[in-house]
Image 1 (cartoon, rainbow, N blue to C red):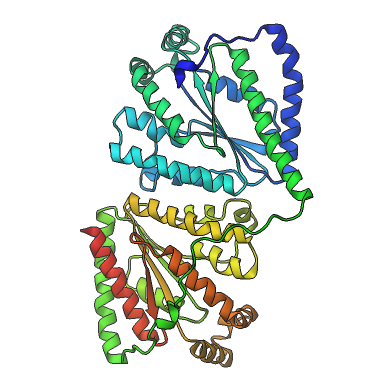
Image 2 (image 1 turned 90 degrees about the vertical axis):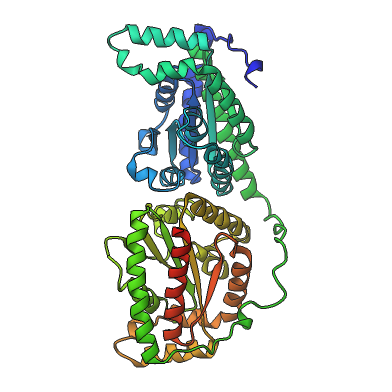
Amino acid sequence: MFETIRLSQKVDKEQYKKAMPELEAKLGELQRQAKDLKIPILVLFEGWDAAGKGTLINELLLCLDPRGFNVQITLPPNEEERLRPFLWRFWTRTPEKGRIAIFDRSWYRRVLVERVDGLVKKSVWASAYDEIESFERQLTDDGLVLIKFFLHISQKEQKKRLTRLASNPATAWKVTEDDWRRHKQYDEYLQAAGEMIAKTHTESAPWTIVESHDRRFATLKVFETFAQTVQARIDAMKSAAARPAPPRPAAPAEAPSFSILNRVDLSPALDREQYGKTLKECQAKIRDLEYKSYKKRLPVLIVYEGWDAAGKGGNIKRLAQGMDPRGYEVIPIAAPSDEEKAHHYLWRFWKKIPKAGHIAIFDRSWYGRVMVERVEGFCTEEEWKRAYREINEMESQLVSFGAALIKFWLQIGNDEQLQRFQARQADPNKQWKITPDDWRNREKWPQYNAAVEEMLYRTSTTYAPWTIVEANDKLYARIKALQTVIHAMETRLK
């Protein structure tokens, strides 16, 4: 790949001075248009040490309104970051719609520095390609413009630049022992970089290799690529707005003709005495497993979904009752805030991923995309159909990281829900639990039922299966959930 790159390309001073004013004005105008159209832009710079990443980033920033961008510098992960999936720190720093994020190095560190320096096993960096591909596709499918630059210089040129920097007292601090060590490993890094570009050069997230021996040539290429890429997205959005809506996308594989939920036997029940005894045993066991999970740095995610009034809150309360509050967090999921709406819908859930050794209990979750947002029309059909794959990919990454992921659907009958609604309405101490939305959602039971059926069918995987909890009897439902958590944590700890 790199053999075909002509590093000798140059731009003379006059040509550069003539082209730059127009390009600088163009970039500023494109930033304003992208803000108005709410287009998020992410620009990442990878490349050799001393290739000029800092210089080019500074040149780019001088053309932009500083209120509309932020620069992210990617250093080796700190302790907080090492305790979470490797993409966590990048998901949480993706730009809002209408803003620009510029990354000085990025998630590609895993398949470059961490690979060549042996900081992670081959199985880890090799699997990172799939995670990176899904990460970038999810962002670009959601409308983000992703521009990837690799600044290329020869080993000879790199040595010359490192020597020049090291010999100047004002810049000697920029050159470290690691820089010289990586210089000696140039061929190994060249091979890794070539494989990285070949595996991650996609239609929606292509690489641009920047010949960086000549600063003026490199600057013009970066500016022109930025301008062309952003302009193409703006033109595409304006064109799409001007033409009729496209036909519906092809549906995914057919959902099952049988009903998963109708097969659930809702008759199981427990008497109060048996419940009380088993509850104490389960809570003691969970407290012990919480401590063992902390010691072994096992992250645990427990997801509760279910019908309104199915008993999620009471179930979570009994689960958490015996746990050390320093080791878990209950995360209630409501309608997204304005900040959350300005990001990919998974962004707010990635922010809440627990660090290794801690437990996160989600009272509703990312599955809102394929239930509430689908039924209520808060997202497009294309978006919720795409979400099945995106959710499966995210959960696969969590489990690959080592997490125990436990997912509950609390199932109750239609008549049981009505009785619980009426009981809440009649009890002054529980009236706060029932809202007009609950009654309105009940009227859409068939639509929600169809959405739940498809959700269970498409997202119950070998690595993150759903557990359907028969919840007409609250006591039985609580014990089944606690016993499921115990089994899952014990299995994962082994």
